[in-house]
Image 1 (tube, rainbow, N blue to C red):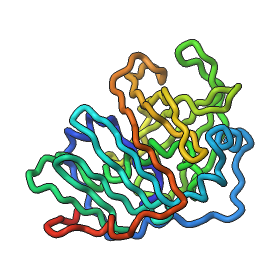
Image 2 (cartoon, rainbow, N blue to C red):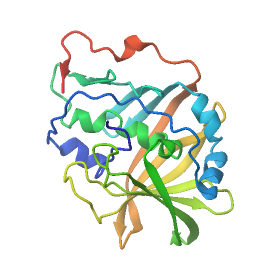
Image 3 (tube, rainbow, N blue to C red):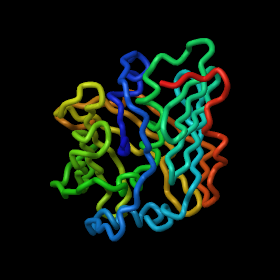
Image 4 (cartoon, rainbow, N blue to C red):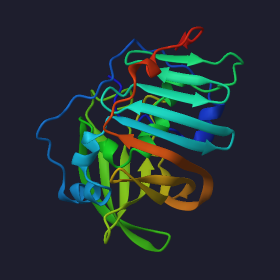
Length: 260
């Protein structure tokens, strides 16, 4: 079951990547892990962003992301994780079992299985790491851009997702408990543990339905596991998080769509 945070080497790499990864049809509906306890610091981070219980009440998630090659609208059912992405020249979706693509002019050059929930996972931070299968370890503080930050490491059980060797670190402001950076490794294409870390700065936030969600993400070049200089920016708008689930018809493959 593909569940957790399938991440990118970078968004630039994604668009140049034509690798394919064959997958059996799978059901990705998250399972509730009753009574799961989180480290105190992680609970504080959730609270600083509007509260995990508030997040769990939500069913529909929609946002518009502006990218260098145009805008995309992403829609997700938070309980089933069904997804639809609408761009000017293509549409992608996940119907609960399979990923489909409608791309009559063959403008989408990446891997649809890799991409369909990619930006959603970045945008749903830090709440998305509450999904089952993760374990958490507090790390030593770090200094990024002359600011001291706390750090919590996230790893996964061997049976979690397509890339259980992926690792993540949330770097947070020790006074406000707000998330400020995300560090991550990528194993999706290589299939083995990586020691190369990538960094995203969560630069601006917006509030929607009581939840604090990122408005701007900045990817950084990295040297010695520290941010060197900005390399790419993503901006979000028209963010909607609702207790009302999206219509299931949104996620059904349209005529002429192909399954990945």
